[in-house]
Structures are given as C-alpha cells and as structure tokens.
Length: 83
Image 1 (cartoon, helix red, strand yellow):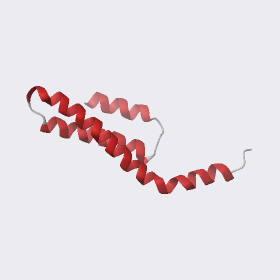
Image 2 (cartoon, rainbow, N blue to C red):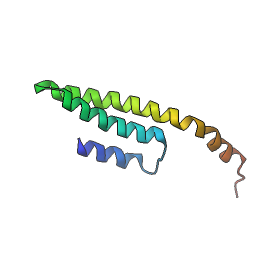
Image 3 (tube, rainbow, N blue to C red):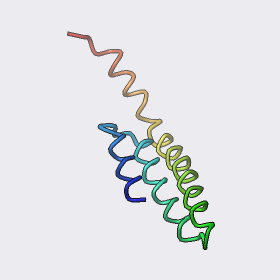
Image 4 (cartoon, one colour):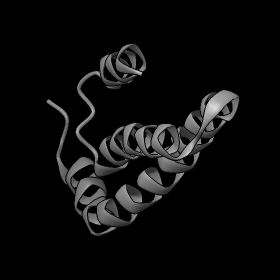
C-alpha cells in the first residue's frame, strides 16, 4: 500500500488541485479502511474495493472544492496577454 501511495503522489507531479489531492487521500484512506474491515482471503478484495471507492469519492469531493476556482483560472488565462 505504501508503494502504491508513493507512485500516486509521484504521478501527480506539480498538480495542486483539490481533485488530485482528494483522489490520493481518498484512495489511501479507503484502502486502509478496506484492509481493516476485510478478514482472511477477502482482505485483498476489500482493500482494493476500498481504495477504488475512496479514490472516486475523494476525487469528486476535491472537484467540488475546485469548482469556485475554475472561473478565476479561466479568466486569468483568457485575459492575460501573451508576451
């Protein structure tokens, strides 16, 4: 799980959006929760399911947090002249 987290963080690069951060945090938290809940041979399945669900939920929450910022980003890019 630690390796997966490190790879996910490395792949985001310089992205600082809440959607990317929410996806990573949600995936790690969901995987840990799934691993805690799962027992025996079902632990791997519950860990994977928790990570997938956590990534989706965290990403959506982050996207909702980014929503108010998008008009500002678009305005900055469209109104700033290129030199």
